[in-house]
Length: 352
Image (cartoon, rainbow, N blue to C red):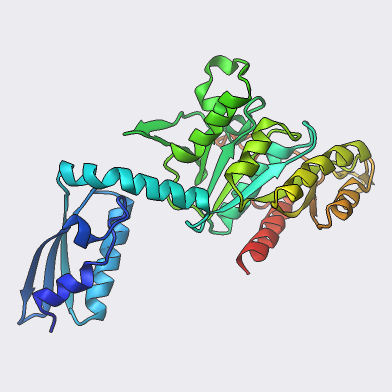
């Protein structure tokens, strides 16, 4: 039979899901009552935000702890902590969360999708790789870091805009994938004329001012080439992995090699090469036509001492009347299945 003191001792180390510090530090254990005849433990807990999914997870955690230690039944009530307690610990919590995300201690794996030139389908690869990782049960986010050529929201059919909660930006969610893009902060598709330092600050804010929550993978759609933003990403994320996108054309592969070499010089591991627009397969004859030539992906992989993760043909997603997402391949689409295999290879490589 648990005593009141034992219950407090068991729950003291449990962390507030938003402040990321223990209930002992926040004095969050407000009441403990025990009915000895029924071996029932009743607890009132103070947390920084109530009526959230995180509260439900915390409830399951607390009930599990108490039942494993002898309680037959558990009753839980939640209340919000006083404002002065929340304000006292909020800055430290945000700093800890930011440091964890940027320092790679959170468990989030960063994957930058890059290319040597525009027009090779890099953004299409980003959104479909994100969707495939989501279908594999992963928690996924996308930063559309292609500041000048942002296209991820349109590709995914995102019509909402991010909301602001306190001092944090809440990313838009589409098909279960969290998305943040420069396109959300530009009116009427206006051109961006910022210089490097301002672009760097915007990219920085995408990491530090967005409430990403708990992610398994954060994908970055980088601008093509080796410019300011690509350099900033390499400086911000020392633990970032990279996927290089090319077409089979020798010129595309040649310029993609520069992006790959920059990744290697900054000690970013290259996960592999994706050859997009590899061929066109006729529905009538089944014959493959190599519209952009052959061998670019394989040659690029050899130069970068990596492997070809997949070769994707030219084909449109299925048309769906009730879903607008012009660049998302459905799970049962042949290219959707190809992306699924690529995502599975990446998961196996990073989580082995």
